Length: 183
Image (cartoon, rainbow, N blue to C red; front, side, top):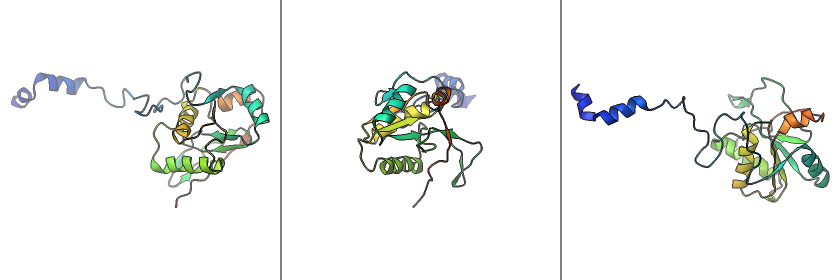
């Protein structure tokens, strides 16, 4: 009891009233990336990219042959390798940069993202890049924001991604993530 009197009732009350970290996850990081509940309604647009629907993406692909499609859907990474727990399909011609749409990236995943964007854009920060995931998925939104932070300027977000492409009756192809190599 002597211990409690020394702390004061305000401090004790705050210890018991604070919600556990698992009960109230932070939705966004300090940098503004979505950090949890990735499969939930997304905003109608991105401040740093042109938002595309399926007809607009088809038109862009016809007009600009150099467009790079970048799928950022997640894939389990365990013991230094991607684990194929289920078949993943994406848009034809896409590059799958798995796990790069998370709200916070470790240095390994940040390097994987930056290195692949540099390779795919041939080092040209104005190269057209289209990021996507699935519908109601924040991973594509995060990835386009992250590409903008890296200095890329011609960015597109295919908001409803794989689901919209499939619903339009367009073909999907079986995909494998771009390899993560370590120096």
